Amino acid sequence: MKGFDPLAILLNPDYGRLLLHGLEMTFVIAIGSWCLAMSLALVLLAIRLAPSRILEGVAIAYVSYHRNVPTLVQLILWYFGVSSLLPDQAQYWLNDHNAESIFAIIGLGLCQAAYFSEDLRSGLRAVSPGQEEAARALGHGRIGALRYVLMPQAVRNALPALVNHSVSLFKNSSLAMAIGVAELTHAVKEVENISFRTFEVYLIATVAYLVCSLMIMAAGELLMRRAALAGGR
Image 1 (tube, rainbow, N blue to C red):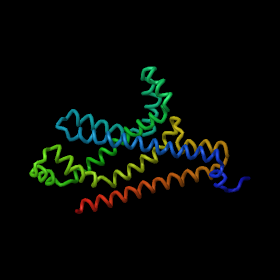
Image 2 (cartoon, rainbow, N blue to C red):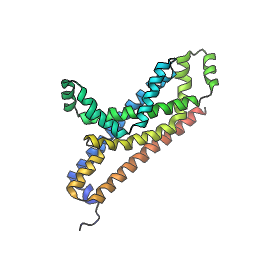
Image 3 (cartoon, helix red, strand yellow):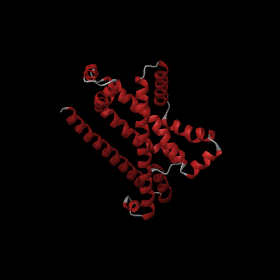
Image 4 (cartoon, rainbow, N blue to C red):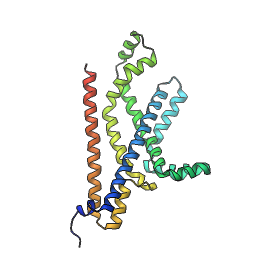
């Protein structure tokens, strides 16, 4: 019977290489999907602010869909469903350029955009109506008031929720294993199958996810403090 020895995993060059590559892919997926989610969230927010009931209805439907359908189902739909509808040349290109990671970034990013957009909208609604009136009095138009006065305050108000959802996005990157992405959870499973050291391998993964999540939360806390200081000037 093997004794408890996590160093046997970490010091093994083959296992360590697999785990490091998995951690790298986790950050690639998380950062790529975060950038997509935030960009799309700003677009959704702009649509919600547009004076069009049709566009607003489209944005509401988008948010409702992505908040009520499990993320794993959305990833599977993109990888096995949407990809099969693409032209053959597009499928060949994707297969040559790590299709699993691309669809993981798309699926996670589109899903998380719904949460980010609602965070930003809540932050914007928390801004006093007098702020827009003051911006207009200073000569700003609607877009200028939104860009230079309202949105900075909205982002500051939304930071706690945005940080929490960013941590959730990082953790949800583990779902990409279901479509074959060689991220950390996938690498852990591979190492476990080879080494048969189940407890040690999953303990290492647990610690890795915990440390990375705490680092994201610490960075968010620092950002919130700086935003609070800037807002108090």
